[in-house]
Image (tube, rainbow, N blue to C red; front, side, top):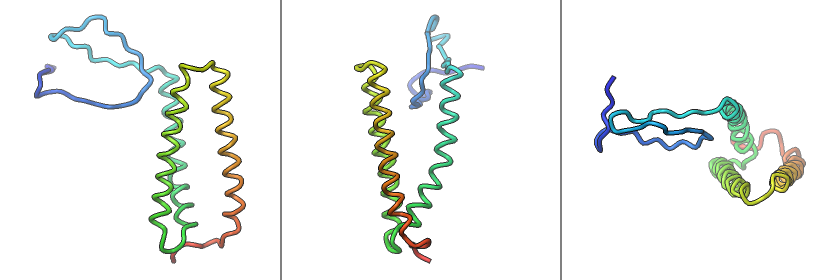
Length: 137
């Protein structure tokens, strides 16, 4: 198999993965085409993806069900906005890893998780008071 590497033939891929790679022998004739992902990192992403596949339809159904009849699309957009804000917060917290001790970092992560659990508990009481079918027919 022949690979052509020039400005007209290339593949640019943007993927965020915790990967490890060492380029020990590469040249234009023999480019380095390898990326190694450890088994724990691969397992983490498999579990994360399965979790996202389970939570996304539930969140969309919940937001769609609890929305007033004429605000269903806006409510589902709010769900995606909340996901975006959570990813942004996760990135901001993750950037603290190199500046904090592990104990401090995981204390902050635990505090955020406890705060989120408290907010969900408070929202649960309000959601249970709504009729079982609040959205459009």
